[in-house]
Amino acid sequence: MSTPIPVVTVDGPSGTGKGTLCALLAQTLNWHFLDSGALYRLVALRAGDLGLALEDESAVAAVALALPVTFSIQDGEFRPVLDGVDVSARIRTEEAGTHASIVAALPAVRAALLDRQRNFRQAPGLVADGRDMGTVIFPDAVLKIFLTASAEARAERRYKQLSDKGMGVNLRALLEDIRRRDQRDQQRAIAPLQPAPDAIILDTTRLGISEVEDRVRQLLHERRLA
Ligand code: C5P
Image: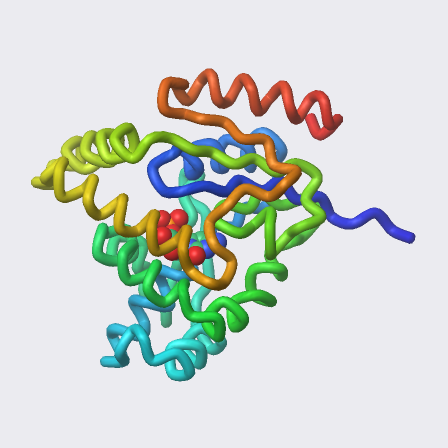
């Protein structure tokens, strides 16, 4: 029997540093990269552009199944091209994140994205970023990491990111948004945000990204992945 293509999963709520860690992992290992959150953001964006209600499960699932998207990686960033147009900036707003979490709670939408996500598993390996990568999409992953951090720490990081980009933001509104999105992601009936039983949980509230990276490098070494 041939050995399955290895997958490393990184799950957890937004603002825990998943994106940065995944970009580093994909670069270190020279593996492919899946940003599954981008898929939910794209589905919500497309549904909105088509004038659909985000709760219209069968219509939004049809959009998810037929999503005309390709991806390119530029400077370690996952850039989606929808119908020939680079929509990276449009899917990265706070509103796009909230809309993504609404469509992500619909079982038919999640089912419609299953194969698309699993098709990212290409040799020599895949780093997968999301909420259910280790629990549902790639339960046989060779290493599962689950990042957590307090909602306050995540809101502050997001605040800094947006302010650095010159965007006017309100810390309290960001914190409320994060809490609402966490609640929706954790309490949904299908694929709720939770660590896989065999995941390594890293709390990044007080850990800097370089300490997280050191710990993950050590894990890769222990599992003979790098
Ligand atoms: O990771 P990101 O913030 O881009 O994800 C946006 C939303 O998409 C999340 O809040 C979550 O509701 C949903 N999502 C999901 N399953 C994934 C990835 C993202 O439900 N694997």
